[in-house]
Image 1 (spheres, rainbow, N blue to C red):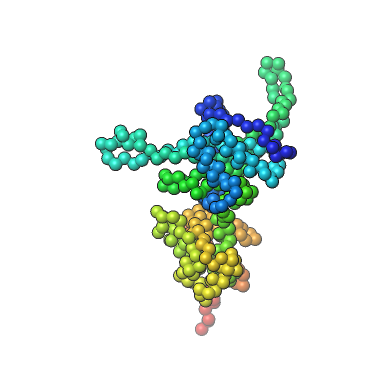
Image 2 (cartoon, helix red, strand yellow):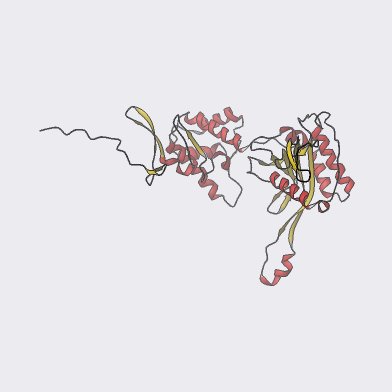
Length: 366
């Protein structure tokens, strides 16, 4: 409850006993919790060690418990941690579901097809969803029996299952194996993390979002290369990072330390760069010269129009791989944005006519 931060009601029910319409609502909500990009909306976080009333232990005990009441008790312990020193602006509904993650094993040959069909990777999990309540809408209804318009009054709050506030999945799964040392945290919106839930409730280590890594990378580059950079050099930087990602496609997402960034910048054409200068930049920006940046976080989405170029007269979107076709040039004393295209451009159904930018000087008369 928002006023008292107390638990008003709780219940434990088998999912199969819910009505079909209720199941659909909850399933749609759970899918929303698990939907999103890693390091943007979803975060694999590591539990802290030596923490009093550790949530890792609570979740693990709940995962292993076969007793209904014991399971409820462990989940209520987590809810109490959520309510401690926290005042919500509206009434909150917290849902825990305990299920099993199953993944069929690969068949070795056709002869074992029947037996392998029943062979699966099977791991239990706990999924939590936090949802806010909202006041019902005031509506005007038409009664077909009485043939009259009626004002429809509903006093019960509506539980918003379409937009979860936050949630988490325990444990994480890697290659079909459970990792009980990590929890998958889900933010309500990209980059909007609930640090009370992360630090005080789940007791996990601090994390950097993809947006944080991107800002750190940009600041480091500015420290060593200056605030100004041409599109050719920036395009080369993105190409080098993307090439590294593609080369490690089957492995973990590559991480860049100061040495890796130095190699990328040098091969991309950044001048007057040395290791000491880059290490100083790391210390200045993030105060940790050993910090590693995720490659996927510091380059915009490579094949989509993820780069915005804003000018007074227009806003242009291009992908990192096409940035090389954009140039800023000086022409007739003015700054111009030039975009190289392979075909004539269409505007409102009309094909643009190429214009000559330079005029021939008059030939000298004999």
